[in-house]
Image (tube, rainbow, N blue to C red; front, top):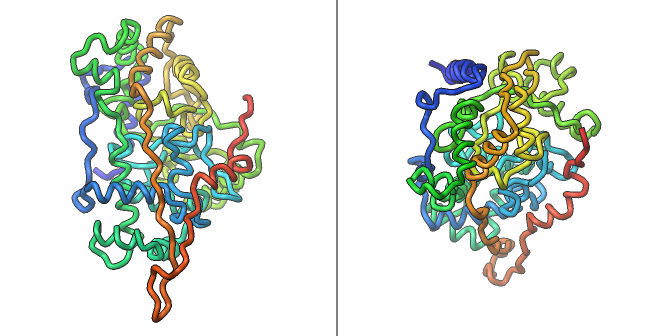
Amino acid sequence: MTTNRMVRAASASLAALLLTGTALAADLPALGPLPPAPAPSDNPTTPAKVELGKKLFWDGRLSGNGSMGCVACHSPDLGWGTGGAISFGYPGTQHWRKSQTVLNSAHYNKLFWEGSVTSLEGQAEAAAEGGVAGNGDSAMMEMRLRLVPEYVAEFKKVFGTEWPHISDAWKAIAAFQRTLNSDPEKVPFDRFMKGDQTAISAEAKRGLDLFKGKAGCVSCHNGPLLSDQSFHDTGVPDNPVFQTDPHYQITLRWQHYQKGVAEDYYRKGTTDDGLYYVTKRAEDKGKFRTPSLREIAYTGPYMHNGVLETLEAVVEFYDKGGGESRSGTKTLKPLGLTEQEKKDLLAFLGTLSMDQPLTVKEPTLPESRPLPRAGTTASEAPAAKPASSHAHHMQATPAAAPTKKKD
């Protein structure tokens, strides 16, 4: 069975479960603590590689203008996202989707909201080179790394090359991201699943029963990751900024164009089409990958366009049966939750995040130096301090960050 057929089959079977308003949890992947993050055989995780990847994650030299490192849109202080409804765009542009957290991203089999890449290595490259993200040129970024003596030494140590290669930079960043995972000892729900009956409240236990039963959340949020990793159209409404701000409209049209949709659709398209960009099948319009519910206490607002600001709003959205799908029909059935049941469900959702957010200390980035002239040594060349990703974040936010507007 092809990947696309598998996605459609999974979506159809889960949609049938969702329509019932209940879910047979026994027939779905069991909930439980996350296992250790997997690493591909061609990119094994080592401490030295993780340390290099951490620096590169912060380093703005891996972008077009030298200041849009990964951390610009994935800040540890903001749930490893931006904390806003829609991500920052490259200076002079605006993004079109919420920046997903990179927490637990090693456990996904597809990355991005539409599942367009299948590895963290591919995700790092796509983000750094994306026109409204990092906007970097691979040859330029590689040359910047080669003019940093400390990086030259580290890449040689980690990868055995005389000079840094940009493909190895993505491997190092991916290795770092594979360390950003929920710690089961710090997640109340995981402690409960390991036998600590005092780890969550009676209210949360009732919420767990609702999650697996009446509310039907487990239909799509199952397994240790609390995601079926499939794609669904639940009728999430458009973010109103796309109707009022030309910068968002420009990017959305560009998104249609660069993903290769037909010209007549490009001219009329006003909505993010999600999985359709990958499959070009009409029935996939408006489908987005199910996000993990882990660490949701720190990763709002919610949905692919950040249109729901709170978990209370998310529960209300699903209790009402979601929104109108792109096919013009309701995919979900109203749940009929009582006010107490909503509180219980929210109490359970509150147990899925670590007691404290995961943060790491910002690394000190090495300096660039020009290549030495004949007859001189590298140590005689003047150093150039790297541009800070945080500097871009502070300078570009007022112009690039989405303005919050009431519906």
